[in-house]
Amino acid sequence: MADTLVTGDIHLPATILMPIDADDAPIVVMVHGSGALDRDETIYTNKPFRDIAEGLARKGIATLRYDKRTYVYSQPVTTLDDETVLDALSAIRLAHQYSTRVYLLGHSLGAMLAPIIAERTAEPLAGEETE
Image (cartoon, rainbow, N blue to C red; front, side):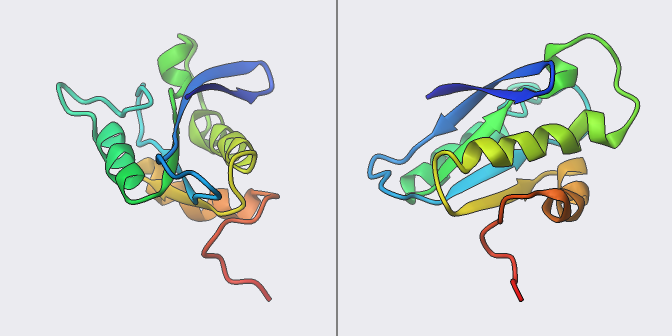
């Protein structure tokens, strides 16, 4: 299903792929690597985020993926917050509208920033230790 990820004035097209039996399915927020990437993280003919999303849906797990702001907007970004972190935080908020069990999956830069994103989110991520 189509949705929109909103971070301030930034509006990014997003796709939420729900499994057929979607009753309280966990959802994985997919965070890109560096560069101007679409929601499928298309590289030549490869679409790794789409492929992962389809595989997870077959296993009963939903996914949220979105176009990066560097893909949608032409203005350059100068900070990691603007390139990745702020939109990932917005994606986590959006994912919580669909499930109480939200997980974070990062590739390359997204994986490097995952601990920072997890630390800064106000919404709980599934799999985190709580005190």
